[in-house]
Image (cartoon, rainbow, N blue to C red; front, side):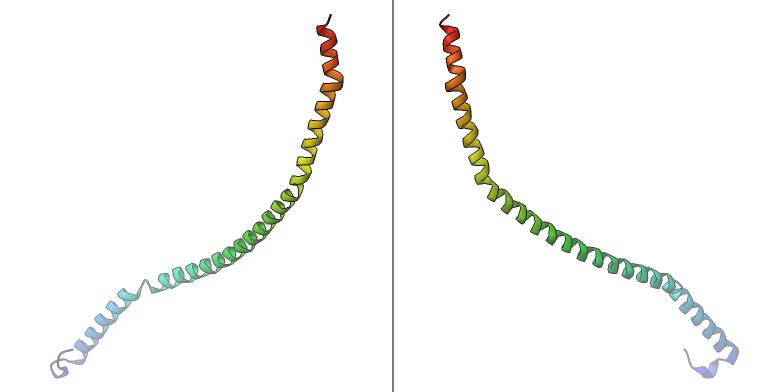
Length: 108
């Protein structure tokens, strides 16, 4: 503000009002910004909780997959035994039942 001696009180009041108007103009969006910041903060908190839940679910899923892998590995021996037994049965059926029928049929 220039020297006060040259101003009367009405000029000072006008200058104060002008400055106040500029301050109001420059700060009029602050309430909207505050609302946006509050909304963003609440969304971030919600996402933080959701991420925590996803991590817990992922951990449980990983544990369950490991358990299933173990179950499959333990059954692998059983599947090999079943494969061997079915192969032996197939060989027996062919050699003792089907082969004689084929030989008998071919000899006619």
